[in-house]
Image 1 (tube, helix red, strand yellow):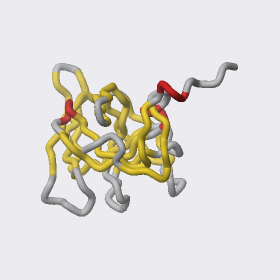
Image 2 (cartoon, helix red, strand yellow):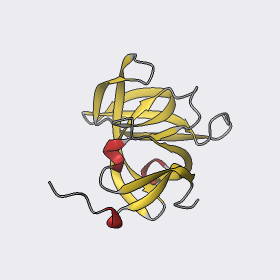
Image 3 (tube, helix red, strand yellow):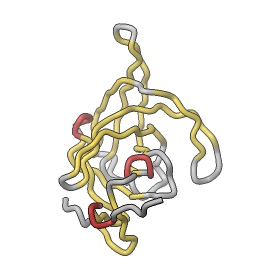
Image 4 (cartoon, one colour):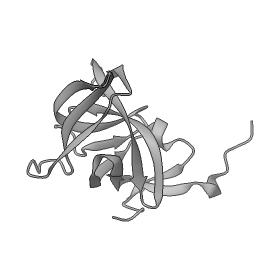
Length: 147
């Protein structure tokens, strides 16, 4: 097996500023987490509904933990529902949406679950599925990709 060419991968820190332009989120604190398979966003007031036979979800996100006055209303088609095992070992069914993610100058589509991350430091967790083959992570660095 040929080793991956590391020179072609962008460098990211363990935390970054991200954007989710499809959802109207211009800047959100994100933790880069290679221990998580799928990405997750802190979502509240989650409501499912159907439009023309397609399941959708509406929800609110906080762009910074602890700042409830910075809520952004979001909506998206539901891509899937999955059983996810959280870091505390508990399993729960979560709604999955697909949306574009921007880190610095990089923009691509990811799957992301809606989760209660109220006790976590970052409202957005970016997991392995989203990062794979795109970035090298420097665990000693932060905010390498700009604001």
